[in-house]
Length: 424
Image (cartoon, rainbow, N blue to C red; front, side, top):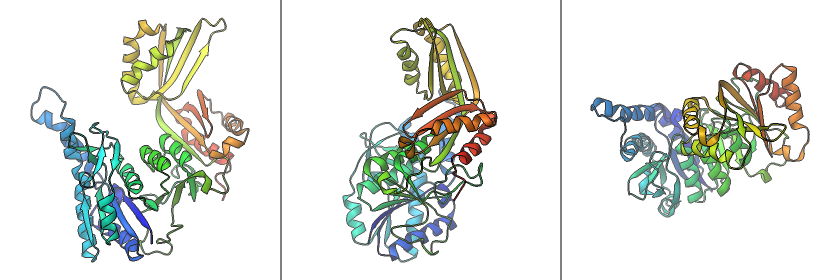
């Protein structure tokens, strides 16, 4: 017998038929004798609808300001998960399974006070563990907890993944199964490269890089939590037949296991290729090369919540002037330029230039730590395809390359092939 947390995303619970199918997945684990908790998202599209209602209410009410109380925003948007949890509990009860729904505050999942983007601070799993021991299935509304002000607080978009991993850590689960509309983590996006392979295992660090660099299988914060608390996490498909052979395999279910790198016996040099579209590049020309200039640039950007990624600095031959180039999401370019413009005197640049429509392609693999020539292989392969590189950043397990947007798919396929990821 094992203790399992199962999480189902919005497409998996998009309608009543799919919720019933989810109940069949849960029943399989219950019939196997496992203790089970389930975390659910809102039905597909429901959260967007609720957010639209909140954002449009000030307009309907004729308010002078478009702003609204973030606490009431949370009260509204958290209702989508609560509906799903109740419906799934009813479906399980119709199968003669002892189940009840839980809202975040009932567990309780305690968060900080950052409504709309709260972070989990503590989970008391005592009561859920007791109920699971008695054979009851806990169906938990994801994406939410309770803040210090005793109000519902939501965790930000994709927060149900974070809820599931946090609950798995809180109840000391043997594993956390994330059910979604894909059957695992692939070496790259199969829509771009049909030869992409599903990975059997991937290390926490690799998955964290994949998630932060464009792979949308898991939310970044959920991977961070899983890595910190060593929660073995499986990415699985909710659309496979719940009763198909192997679906109930406790130690090796179908899908991709995200785990500590020590569990991966044969580590590949490169595990996968990720990409992020809609990147933009900003360059500040002829800055004085003096202490504090970087803080003068990136401090105000951080205060404006603009996420800066790749940073490249070029110093003139005499060491008096420097150029600073960095990337931001395309949607933040105008905001970033406004911030830089208002701080021009303090920063001391001559001119600012920007370019949108770029793509960041990343090569990821824990095997890079012990292998030389990984970067050279990428640069040579891209050069042979006539792809110009605008910027490069590296870490122990990652190489990120900035290129023009139209070359994105060609670059992904080229890198996927040159590292042999298209071979079984």
